[in-house]
Length: 304
Image (cartoon, rainbow, N blue to C red; front, side, top):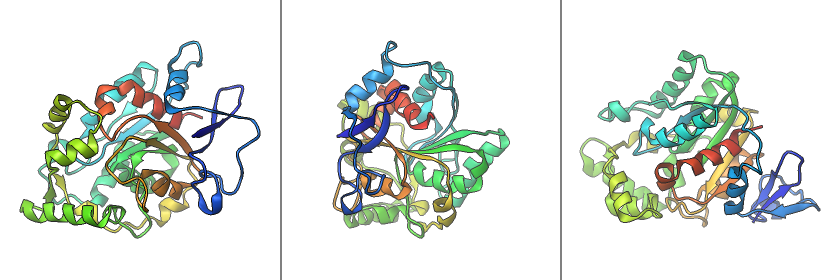
């Protein structure tokens, strides 16, 4: 369940899904117990309250920089960005090496990718930014944030990897998944990973009708494998005092939810204290089929 404090300005997130922290603690708030006055909001009613014109105020204008994940490019955000702009927000979706028009660059490194995002923010002189990363883009956001901390308002992960200092994204995968991706890279002949359709369909777009899954799959390109296995020095990231949020999509089947893996609370707890927003979506489908829903979750994650 998700608890919210009563507030004149609407619900303020307090804790989610009971005792997820250490020693019976709640969410990201240590050993503090839920307040005496709270109310329960399911993801569905949380979304309904946000979108009912009679229940919400005009949105606070924000500047978003949206960072896509693996097997995607900047166009992944087109629908979501359009919905955010309709609400008066400024939205940028930078491309980074090894993706989009540069997808044939199979030797792109993680450092090249994160630097490209930081350079984009410098070039466009973006400030007071809500920097949001989806999936693999979470790790890009971690490193980019180290390079532009003075330009950030908040860092948001939407089912995004939050890698440990000294770790790699591959370290967040179960052993069988890590071996599976290693095998695909070896078989590729150019150190890339192309998802088999069955893996994409059941893991990434599990809520999509078959025809939608097939259409989305037709647009993906092989992913440079190197960054998946790179060890990342993230000491500067974990020293940042920039506010952070985690958007957890609870029907996402890319990672096992439990057994020491998963988006929340396994990785989200690393950015504590943080704001938690819970949404009803899988890993990719609703970014394309229900972009307004995803835009609303990002707004709730980024607003004051």
